[in-house]
Image (tube, rainbow, N blue to C red; front, top):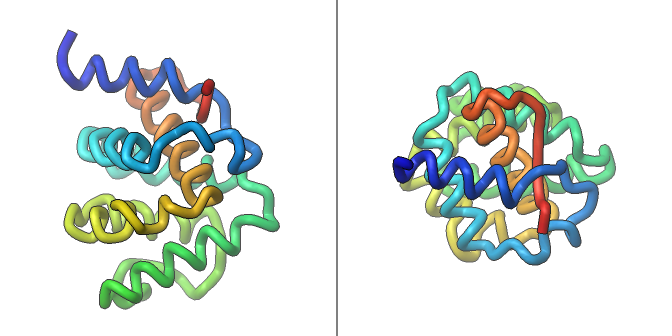
Length: 153
């Protein structure tokens, strides 16, 4: 089995249900989440990334969406990126804006390391919950299993 095949299998074995609370991803290390996410988004198509992030964000309770989106938006602007230049339409926590911001970040490796790396957004349990959900959805799409995502921990 190829390295990518092993990675995909590992992700699919460990992430199977969309988490409904941050406690469901408490056992996922920040580094593990970042490494899996980083490796999969490099292999996924932009459409797979976008769809997975939209679906993952839709699974998050409305009360938590604003917090996750604000964290990403603040991290992006802290890195000197104008959200409008990244394709973000307003400051609204919509699934489309979430997908756009995460797709933009994932297409810029240095930016992704700064925002999702150690001490970054994934330090927030809620953000880790959403991004591991997206991770599993990307893996499901890439394996042609459809559906979506996270933590069978």
